[in-house]
Each structure stands twice: as structure tokens, then as C-alpha cells.
Amino acid sequence: MKRLLAALAILSLLALPAWAGREECDAAALGGDFPAVYRECLPLAQSGDAKAQNNLAFMYEKGQGGSQNYGEALKWYRKAAEQGDDFAQYHLGLMYEAGHGAAQDYTQAYMWYSLAIANSEGMMQDLVALQREAVAGRMTPDQIARAQEMARNFKPR
Image 1 (cartoon, rainbow, N blue to C red):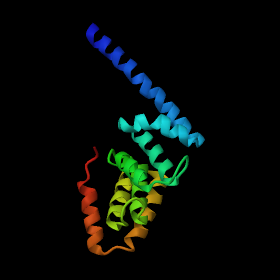
Image 2: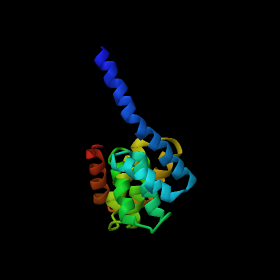
Image 3: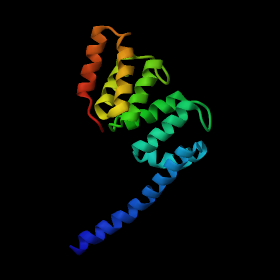
Image 4: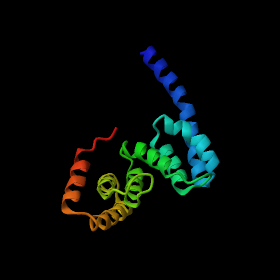
């Protein structure tokens, strides 16, 4: 029992710097301090933190704090989206729909919108459903069926 308590104490101390980094990352993003977003969020994002990945992706997508870089935005949104993050899934859908960071792909957009709908609620869910409906109007029935199959087969990482 003493070993277990000691191990838990050590683990909590190891997690403390990541938690403190989380506060600084979030504060930088909320404050619009994009150089600080990069500095504070990058280590968290590289370690797999979906919220930090979203912060970085949004910064790159909007070109705040540096040059707009859709390729980097797509990369970071994808990392968060693959973990099941609805915000990232929605933004990934937007990027595929517009052809930002990758070739325009309505099938991919529809798939990511479908996943975002499944993982969100309330107004976010309604917003994404409207976006998916709009993109579906530009797709063939075969493309929609393929996108639905891709969404059904998706497994978060």
C-alpha cells in the first residue's frame, strides 16, 4: 500500500508541470498572445494534448503571430480530431471543404462534420449539421455514402 501511495505521489508531481503548462497555454490562446501560444502550447501539443493542438492549429489557420500556414493548421487539427475532439473535427471539415492545407475534398469534409456532430451537443452540433447539409448539396449520393462509411469506421486514437 505504501508503494502504491508513493507511486501515486510521484505521478502527481510529474503531471504538475504539464498542468501548469496547460494554464499558460490556455491563457495565451484566450489573450490572443500568439507567440506565447506557440511557446507554451507546442510542448503540450507534441505530447498529445488535444486542446493545445487546437490552439496551435487555430493560430496557424488564422495566421496570427506569424504567417498563415494551412498545412500546419491541418496537421494539428488532424492530431486533435483523431483523438475525438469535436472542435478539431469541425475545423478539419472546414479546411477540407475550402481546400485549405489539402486538396478540396467534400467526402473528407462530410466525414469530419459527421464525427463532429456525433461528438458535440447543443449549438455546436446544430452549426456543424448545417455545414454538413451545405456540403452534401455539392456531393453525389455515392460520395455521401462513402463519407458515411468512413465516419462509421473511424476509430479515435
